[in-house]
Image (cartoon, rainbow, N blue to C red; front, side, top):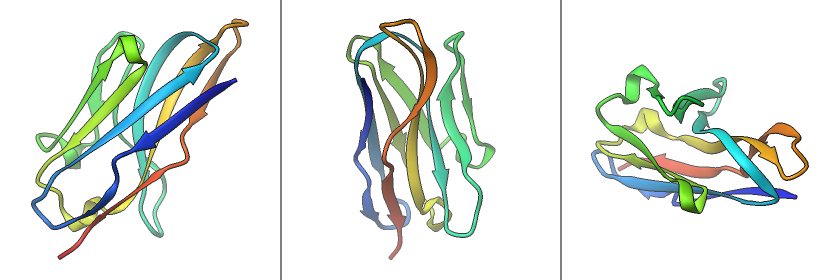
Length: 120
């Protein structure tokens, strides 16, 4: 079995910072890509930041220059450093991992989500 677990959400004032972490564990052969999505109330889920298979990164336009995605391959962990947070960043943030399991099956795994609330 494979698990994807996020942590690091919370309540922060506008202009503040948060760091999210996501770790994949279990019967993993390799990880093709990992990234962060979010879903704000009344809106569709959107990609915030992610690593592609080629190790390139991509970001949602509205977070460029404020958010930074990084990873520790040895720990199967990806981080999202969020600076200069705005109320519009309020959402549930989900980690996604494109994983090949030990039995060579490939599928997407999602974390349970972590709430980020930006409010004064």
